[in-house]
Image (tube, rainbow, N blue to C red; front, side):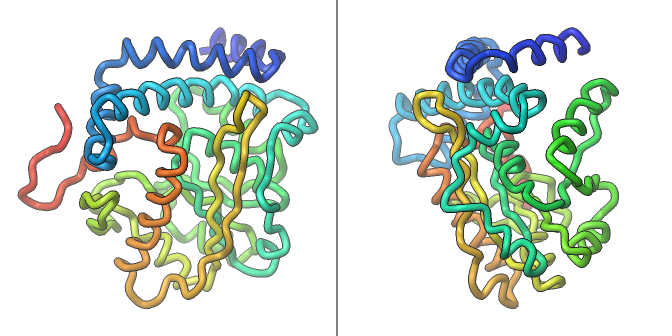
Length: 288
């Protein structure tokens, strides 16, 4: 692991066009070699984008592997490059809503696009709170914490700690950087359509917003064309959210994510088993 970390450190010196192309080349090899992940991605794409041909879905899956690999290697820039270089490569649209973030409790909703770490960097104009998954390897855990902490104060919370530290952080004025669009099982979740397919989806976004009065500001990071960096778009705070129906609030979140996925389909995290948890009596949608 230390050798891999040293290799990543060396890569951050490369110009972004070279680093990006290198990552995409590795991703093309991953698409060929990682058969299980390739099948998961193609299954997800068949479920979510049935209107496309198999050839079109195959092309999106291949491009996803290229983009995912590229994002991993480009993290070397986020972790070690001078902050001035990093900020220069991030194009924010329309602007970081710092005044809104400072005005009251704020949840930054960040769907699982491959460049999500860039969205995290762009959001770091004030201290924030974020979920963190401790890594088994100590060196890699230290590296990830370094990547999260180098842009200023951040309060990291693990899933085992539950929701109380998040509520406390929101009360303390720290925006909560939230990524709720993965299958974490049936606990605290409802089966809500995602591209028309029932998906076990955490209702935490609506529940936290209702409990704290927090506004929800979505943020999505994608690649800029021609290896020029990354685009981070902050969307207007949702109005009349969450309301009184947490299932409907969760449905609204999924619908928003669907719209963003259609805008950059290859950059969504298709290799995750988004539909692993099934409603009672329904068979698995994946090859086990």
